[in-house]
Length: 148
Image (cartoon, rainbow, N blue to C red; front, side, top):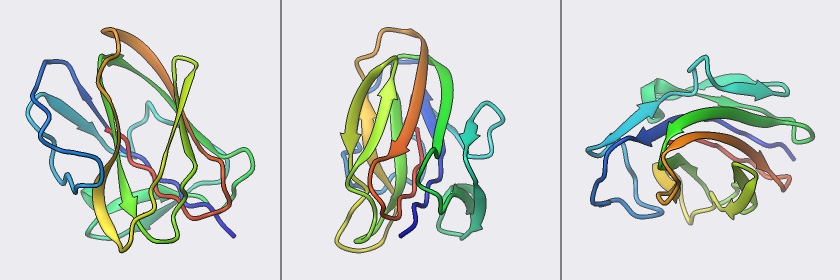
């Protein structure tokens, strides 16, 4: 089996009422959020990464890997909130782990059908400041990762 990971990031620097919920498509940022694509130079890709083109992806492309062992994404940001937006699919990973400032949480990208740009993870109660983030898949399944 292979693992497919991709990434884009949206951060917020202002307060906001959150209209999106986990699992819903979020094809454009809500007020108060800034979106970063997987091509952002501040994102470190560890392992063997490629690019997939599809007009349904944010800005038409995403990063992916077919190597599970040792593959991860690392970056830092200044803010108090982060969202992760990906691609939902029946065969995608149920065991993705996001670690923010050393604290890990799991989330799933598995859906009953293909869903482009669904909100898959959200953390809104961080102290405002600099945060480190690492994302990995803990299971040998396809996984597409996008961060907001």
